Length: 64
Image (cartoon, rainbow, N blue to C red; front, side, top):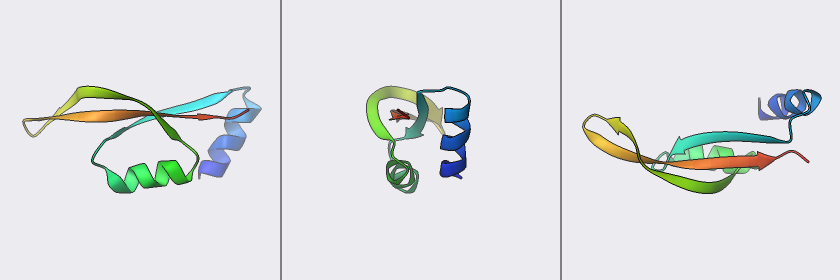
């Protein structure tokens, strides 16, 4: 799936991809890192889920 996304993004002339992931989502974080994304920042108290504030990582991948 990530390979197809990268190919499509390059065909569209995009130079980077971005996503966010909740910091304690270890499986998602590992998957995104394996696909070449890197953590670029943290958004504190980004989400309120079940009464708890959760932080998110901003992640990006350069396509150049």
